Length: 396
Image (cartoon, rainbow, N blue to C red):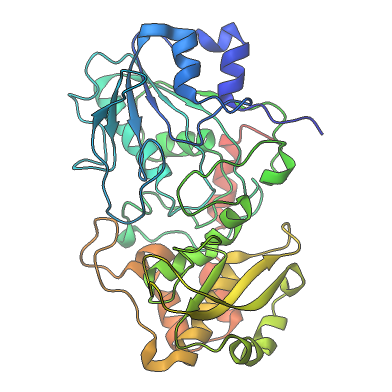
């Protein structure tokens, strides 16, 4: 199988791709924006375009992807080595202002996404498309793989009443698109007038997962140190809306979940029957574990819980497993379980769990200890989405 070439690699090697980027350039990138030799995209752009690269932007977690989640903002600054202004789009503003866009002719986006709606890079890209449409600025996407494949969809369509920074369009949690395809979806959905160009990958197929690409995994955010974490993330991210630790502050964040009140072996034994009833139960193992977060929830406290080990990536359904684990933890812990009520990604009224799930019915399903069949019925509203995205596919 041939190694995947990202958009940035094609830009380096093909002059016709380079010609798609004209005039003064703004570049949105982060630490995972690297070429096949692990050179950062800024260096590549400086080599190709020289002084035409005049502004750099960073998404949530910062330009160097070193800042933690949920409303921990990053500052604007001048890069000491590249001597370029770095504008944060996770600061007092989440979208580029007219002043930031001044003198820009082409806005280039080169971000590694993880294939899940709540991962905020989709929203940042959408805000850029909207801002550039107003200023008549061309947008170019340097495409990269969806690490959890381009075929599998999980979770219900986001309800309009729950639109937020962790979901700005009616898409499911695990959406199956690349950033380039998602840009096309956003342009169509919002009927945007901006000129959009996608520099596609070579050799990427929809059935591929990250470990099929031949590419190095670079953390796209601080708490995804492994590509497998991006696969569990599609489900375990929901625990951000609870007082269950999703493993932040450990070396396997979003692959482990737990709470100080849980004895892991008895908990795993108590849910064995329900877990075995899942049609993908062969695709993972829940290993009883204890971990101690060094920051965030339950700092310094031993947390009993499970480590999710993936055995069959193609069959594994993280979203459904995580919903079932949440339901069982809710009833296992009783009064020790809590839905988080603090502000979440600039939403101050709605519960974080509802923003993450995209439908309040899932929280009700958890609280009522309802069946897996009932959960599947909530999730079963994606057919129109599945049909609509076929026309924007850039890959087979």
